[in-house]
Image 1 (cartoon, one colour):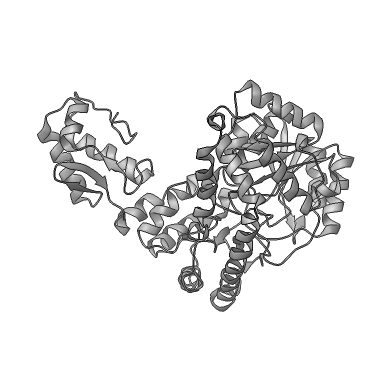
Image 2 (cartoon, helix red, strand yellow):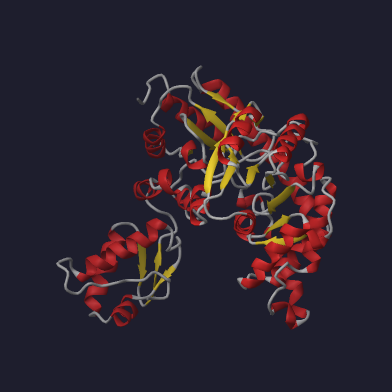
Length: 476
């Protein structure tokens, strides 16, 4: 193991030369994202010492990696992974999205290769003014050293209080004893499912569902069942038929801007869904991850405000601020929240206390609301550029949703296109997207286009290129 965290396993009996084994394992580390762009490698002499090989072998491996455009050796200094990948290598690495989805290394690699990526439904990191949050962290240096001790499993009281206030603004009345701070929205969902469900239970999921949901459900032995949308709401007839067939424990819905559609469920549809779920004794899990990214001032009450005893709400600051904060929340009725907290404690789960306190102070002094006031108009412009470009360039048989929030629109191709083949062609053309099959959909030729990371000019050009790949020729 060397200091980048990538393990090199040498098979000294293999026919493959040792230097080639090093090249392939380092290459895989870089292209998989486990070795971040710009990260430091040991010098060739250090690597030789750590692996117990002669210096010439390590030197030769680094020479080949340099020839591949992957590293930049520096005489008598540590070697570095390149800060920008050759486009051909990036395209090869990014091809894995069709099975794995856009992981943490996807967008940095895409950006380094100069691609116009529409794959990830995330905020633009360049719009997050990190200094404001770092100022709060810096201020903690002069406070109690116990800030760097273990954090309470439920979360620091100050952040729980700020989350309570934010939820109250949205109409969700609760106390801090109804809340838990989590490591993002997916963690909140994972804890809820582990607490509420038993292996072999069914969970209904509004489609499209979150990225990675299939794997999460499978890890818990749960059966996920997609529920169709009817316009901008859950298809209640389909929901009732699935309840009768599967007797689900819970239904996961994302009424505020979904996980790709950008649609906002109308009030009447929310009330009808709650009534149908209550009649079937199904707990509603409301995913509010994108609720703060409201581009059209959609003032519709959350499900948890309409029926707080039937609804568990989860959310995250990953989409309203920055994904790397890894901070979310879970709001649930007392019995479920208590069971979730007990699971936290039994598993030794706690957050990073000083980061939670810094985030609480950031919110309390108005920086969070100021951030949203600053960035939402920019995302609105990008959304409008996406919609106008789709209208201008897409073939007549292609349809899409008009997002009123979030970072994405959901595209229906209207014919039996091979979406994975289309993705590979789009990637080579420099305009990657996310195939719809990644998002817990039942069937159909669908894909997700995201506008959060691109400026309007780049969005227009990316859509024009993608539209040319979709039509007039069909990828049967």
